[in-house]
Length: 622
Image 1 (spheres, one colour):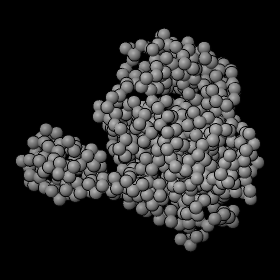
Image 2: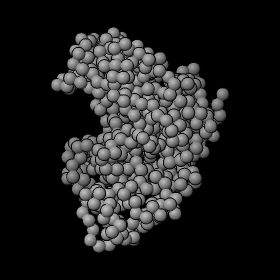
Image 3: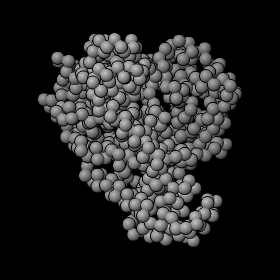
Image 4: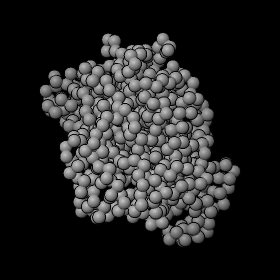
């Protein structure tokens, strides 16, 4: 039924698996995607949206590297918003509401149109391992499929257990069975595993809601998009809406707490801190009488609605009774109740920075199996695992992103170095170089690297180089061109900004906080330059950021370069930390477990102090 041997076998068809399969196949590897249900490739298991705070930056990075998530999102979007526009550009985060059915369909079609990508529908129940090297997978029918490398992207399916009130049943997602066998086998090989929890809200019938009493949440008047390629821009959008819980709703929910699996001990695992269930919010924030609920349409034509903010595992009758007391939900009809799900994960300190496991060669983990939460976090790991699996079987150098190069680099380094005991979600605050890692410059940062690795094609590189050339030229124009007081002062006066008394460089004037690109475009030399050079909105935005934040960018780059010196100080493989008695006991224990590759990575390990780093530097002759 199968070729003698695949280069890369990807297990699981979620966001991580889809990106892994696409990356490996596009790089030229003979790739097989094995999933329990081919109809749910790219399924949005929870909310119908991509992006958000820091997550939007990750989607842009995936696109810049040649992944599919940004393209798929643009093709299936029903609304687009740039979040945090009131803050500096380091915080701007794109987010798109998607048509759930179209999103999955576009993923399926994209993969089917990817050369070198084969498909097979069945559950993988185990791995084929010889001499601590993975050589394939075994399916529930007993088929053995040989492969040079395997990427596991099992999501919430490993021994998944669904909870609704006092009821519980096996499943990896509503209506789909759990995956068994893999956890048990990996434990036999010496892997450490744990349990995590996540949850999802009820889905309701939009025809039963009264939107007139809710607060509309429209998209941006001029919507942008995720991909740097020629994907469609939204010409019309669907509104989301906002409602609120109340003290009465909270009281009704509390009536079911004695039957809640979260409070009666049935659920023992830890859920996502930054996406708590509604019962968890009421319990933790007892002083609050109200919480926001975002009413999100699931697509252009369906009436199904996602109730964002009402994630719950309470009994279905309690969910229904409480939701009926929310403004606008008085006549609500349920499509399905919310539920919680517990699943197995493997602490990611057991991985290398390539996402290859330390215990079994050529075996890669990506997505929720590593303890993360979120489509974007999963997709980025899948992309990196797919790239590195291809490179490894072709005996090429690994592809690893540093913390100052991408949010993806921060994500993977955090997981590998610090591990996680709760579902890990990316935030801008996790990145110490977020001024460098903006959503607007992901292509400038990453496309050349991806082109060198073979994933980004020449067309994508040419687009990036053209954008870079035009923005650099425009920045130089502002540096070199002067403006007369009589031309700029009327604008400055209108903005209540100090007037200039003599001719000054445009760069200096443009750097003022109140002065924006729209004001500079009122000057004839600026508007003429834009017209003559055919500069688009992306170039204008990039130029404005480079001018206004040049000092901050230069300072952060300097800090990153300093730390890079420690990234270049390598630690020998399988270094024996126990022989360095000058290290603290905790440092010896943590460093032995993580086995950092560089001094900089060792410094980021939780429990390792600067004095421990000094000891290591002395020992390594630095």
